[in-house]
Image (tube, rainbow, N blue to C red; front, side, top):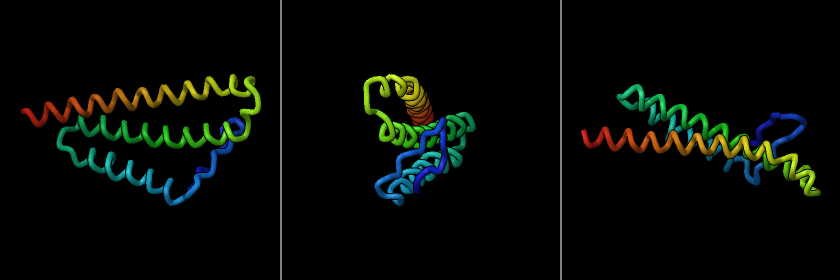
Length: 113
């Protein structure tokens, strides 16, 4: 399912297969959010839920970037305009990495305790 949102006049790229995109989001929701909410430790649960939401945001933002690149990217000037958007995407993915490392540390601490 394509995200029907416009951000500064940019329409997200239509996924090649809508059900594939839906399945990706469903995996994030099922595996990350639901698993995190069933965790007994509230701190671990919160980190997991926030990380899962960041993953959903990153996926949707990535779809927006794909659409923007398809609509422009004719010249290097167009690509220069994309750099701040790409930087924003990279910041989200860096946050996901940090939260994922926290989750790994929490799980290791829980298992050793």
